[in-house]
Image (cartoon, rainbow, N blue to C red; front, side, top):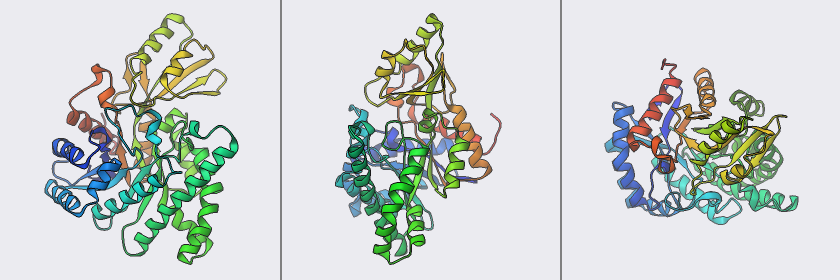
Length: 408
């Protein structure tokens, strides 16, 4: 959306199908003018662009880029952030853990990400910074057979990420825009919470990155660290951190303490519910969760036990199989639900976390990029489905009211 007083607000176009550029561009043409009319009719409208690998190859061609630029100008729109997490098919296929593939141990992930940044550099308005969110290195269950395997995957992924940092630094030092890779922790990612992100940053990224950047650019240790911190930032997905039971204020305090930046705030809500001990009520809650048990995306569940410990389920079916575990008193499930709703029958959402984080952004902005990311409209229960442009507009306008402290 327009540039608000506390940052650029948009939505992620991964909500729209289309793995080829022609198909995805057709979706943008169909929906974005209508959304803009309902949200920012008289102002420039920012877009959070998602390109599959196939689409990125096609949009890299100068003729395609020029046509897209002309359309953006005609519609009074601009691109400032991109989603580089899902590489391949994201609609009408079973995605599940393949959303991480290829992971950061792969040269294909490096090439794809650099290609996205070159496209973003060509689209960014003059003087504006850009960011691309990406996978948290890999998927834990692919490299958890032993500590050595996990360490090897982390090292390989980190070194590959530094190849992207080198390209971003070269673009910026040669007069191009400042752009950052925004690493997005999520449940069962190799990095899934604040502690793991910070540990990786200081135990892997900086120790490997500082000598690498010093050698490439002939700078000292501090300058090398500053380059890395400028070009590798956090994508704070509110749904993901709520699943980890992390309070927004605490997340931001820890990042600030360590001098780490938030490149993008992804505004998203998870499902949650207290799990009653009464069998009848408990069954009602479980039956409600079953309505969200669909086969396309991973819907990791993190349960909270009565002693405060957390229990991780890789997907909703594994959680439902443990429905009779009376030690578990709350579930939170990775199912992005509309951000403007806080109740779904006997289930609730983590909307309160969104309200808290947007209030913190309003008081003291910690990022320039804000992106609503509810990509699950196609797989929502029928009662929650609405026309696409209406749904997206409603989410953006709800967020805008929160950011501007307008009473509901």
